[in-house]
Image (cartoon, rainbow, N blue to C red):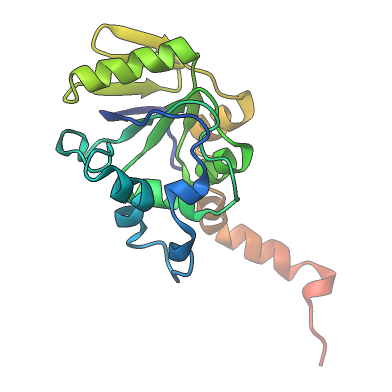
Length: 198
């Protein structure tokens, strides 16, 4: 059983600024958790404390948003998987930005969260449209590679490999293993190095 990702629709949240690293997304003191449950409450915690309620993740008009719109080199820094997990646990299901750090991007793909890129001008236009009316929905379409917000439509980009993984549902490696458990057992039983002799 696969889980395809083709279209996502939800309210947007603009987060401006370049080079927002994984330590800002989820500070290091939260990395000692055993599971990722509860990480969403601590997403951008230090930035939120510093901005005293003015951070988008604290503003009431953006609560429940599902599409995060960022700028350049988002998710740079350490490779912690906790960063995309914190964003996902907060409720984000897709990201649009000018560019993403490679490891952050890969971690998001492994979780089924598409990270799509757009030009600087288009990202700013989308951030502006969301800020003007936070109740607008943003539709991210991986088949047409567009993001639409009312009368604004911008082209999106993603490498063919990860895009096909979302469209086919093959991004979910664990799901594929579970779905093919019987075949895996059969194959494993016939491997000479997995047989035990008494």
